[in-house]
Structures are given as structure tokens and as C-alpha cells.
Image 1 (tube, rainbow, N blue to C red):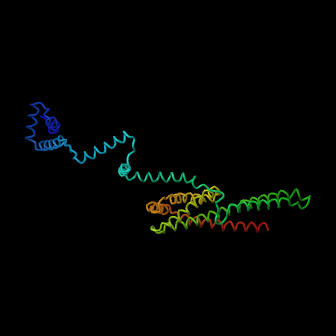
Image 2 (cartoon, one colour):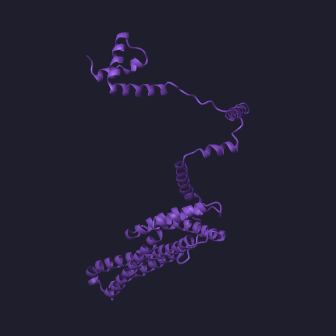
Image 3 (tube, rainbow, N blue to C red):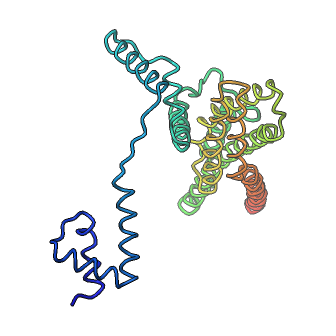
Length: 315
């Protein structure tokens, strides 16, 4: 005598009439006496009945008409070598998923950064600084060189003291000349960096608070952005000191924002402008500029005190 589990294993074969006659008779007698197996068999019959329908929805006439029009157009283009029309391109782009546009935007930004290195290369004849130019650096170096030469030609006090005092005076002159040679250049570069950050902050504040309906404001900001990009290419290689690494990294972050702003093609492209504003806010660019300006001013004061103390020691 079989149990319920063994009878339930025969349900599928019984539904498709694949059981021998004696087993089929035995199963039917069990279903008549067992309500649980009878209920399970009815559920199986209902499920298999739905699955066996295999209904197919026949497309309507409008579908086939559009299908043949599309197919004939594709065949005609393949025969004549024509490219798909602009309308077909629009249909294809409309079917793309939402994340594809984000990926495309990131690729465009990366390409823009790469091309910006070449499009905004510095021009020696036109590149002018607002506070200190490159000529100032050269003048400081030349003045330092003249001071070193005038110091080296001083004769010793006496022949007897020459052997004792000459090495000390020589070391002092070397230290002094190196200090004079390095300090003016660092001061000049720091001034340029502070000026760069200040002008970038003013421009970004104007962008964040600008009126979306004022196209002239965006045009002026793009012009300033291009000028700052050119200046950054010349300024970054001269930020070589240890305490200048942070300002160099900040300028590199600013370059991304400035390049995005400079590459906006249409003045009415509000989504692109909002994307730039969002980047300024998410990266806390304005806060970083304020913090860096405070740090640079503190270093400037410390350097002044150090120079003053060194001058007093020499006296």
C-alpha cells in the first residue's frame, strides 16, 4: 500500500495519461478517499492547463505597417549606402538607459581636461601677472647675484687672520647668498598663488550667486576662467616647496571646475552651469580657498619674523 507522497509523485504522469491502467485505477481510488491528495492534484491540473495554452498575441495592422516601413527603409539604405536619418538617431538615443548619459558626460569631461592642456598653453608674449610678473623674479635673481659678487671681492682684514677668518666669512657669505637667492623667489611665487586664489574665489562667488537669466555674466566668467587656466599652467611648476604642495593641489582642483565652465558652449545651457555650481559646492572649493589663504598669510607672517630675527643677529 502506497502513502500520499508516493501517490503525489504519479500526478504528472497521470495528467498526461502515461500511467499503466492498473496504477491509474489505484490512483483514482486514492484521490477519491484522500482529500489532501485530491486538492493537490486539482491544483496541478489547473497549473498545467494554463501552461499548455501557449497563447500568442497577434500584432495589429498598425504594427505590421510600421514594421514593413522600417524594414524597407533599412533595405533601401543598405542598397544605396545611406546613413540612418537624424530621426532614427534620436529614437536610438531615446532608448538608452539613464546611466549612459552620466558615463558620456564623464568621458566628455576627461577629454576636455586632456585637450585643455594643449588649448590653454601659456604664450610668453601675452602672459601677464596682475601683481608680480616673471621679470620681477629675474630682477630679484640679478640683484642677488650682484650682492653676492660685491660681497666676495672684500679683502681679508690681515694676512695673519686670513687663515682663521676666511672660512667663517666664506660660510657666512654662502649661507646669506643662498637665503637671498631663494627667499625672494618663494615670496614672489606665494604672492602669485595668493592672487590666483583670490581671483578664483571672486569669480566662483559671482558664478554661484549669478542670475540664470543673465547670459553676459556667464560670458565674462568664461573669459576669466580661460585666463586663470593659462595662468595655472605657468604657476604650478614653480610651486615646488614643501609648504606649497597644498596650494598646488587646490589649483589642480580649481582647474577641473574652470575647464568645465570654460567649455560650456551655449550661454543658455543651464544644466551645464548647474553641474559646475554643484561641483563647487560638493568639493567645498570656496572653503578650501579660504583655509589656504589663512595658512599662506600665517606662513608669510612667520617668514617676516624669521627674516627680522636673522637681520638682528647679523647686526
